[in-house]
Length: 340
Ligand code: DAH
View (cartoon, rainbow, N blue to C red):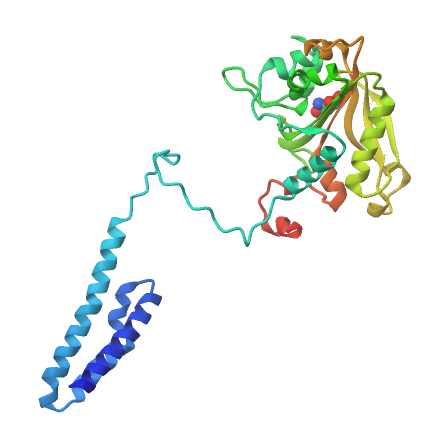
């Protein structure tokens, strides 16, 4: 009898382990452990069968009990409410573990640029993902009906709000926010990186959604020389070498004069291209237009400043030799894993 008890208690332990490992818990009733016990029952002399059979039955009932309990637990799980995916009353979901994840390469590079600018004395302020006509155009010296508005074709809501086509939307805000610096003889120096939107036909160099890094610097006696030196320092630090740079005239309503800023392809990234291909246009820039300063309550006869705005994807594509901008938002793991 006690030998039988030992057999059943060992079998019970064994069944428990097998049961825990099963996804379909009902499979436990077909377990080799139970089957072996039934086979053994058949081979026993008649006088032992009753006791063994009783023990075996109790064991089976115990196991069936586990299955029933599990079914109860499954039934108690809260049903998923597909009509309210953002139910604020729902329990906070657990965060997924991060061991296998990594930051998106664009975020890594955006942080890198922000960090360099911060070390150069710039505050860093995020831009906005929805804005209004005043910040997108008016405050930047594009009055109603100005033809240059057409260069910034983006998306609007039916209420007239705008998905910003550039981070310049932040200029008026930061100029106002940091205006008091000027009274203390300190400059306004702010970097504004964020996402922007354009109604673009997509190709290897154009996306409808991308990132820009905008900078403004205002103080007394600031000139184009300061603009060039600042951009050379910022981008030189980013590419890790002294860069050759050039500017060429351009037009933006919010700067006067306005330029395009180009660098010579960093030596580390030379690809044996022809000479004509060596200059890489990186961004738009210029001296902040007096109307933009006035609009923020800054006197342009006392203070001057420069601003720039460029695409982050372009920088990252040059740095890593990425041939198609669409990789960034593709979600393709083969692409993303190369950066982790
Ligand atoms: N906002 C411009 C664009 O996206 C780029 C730009 C040009 C920004 C000149 C500036 C600037 O701040 O001064 O095309």
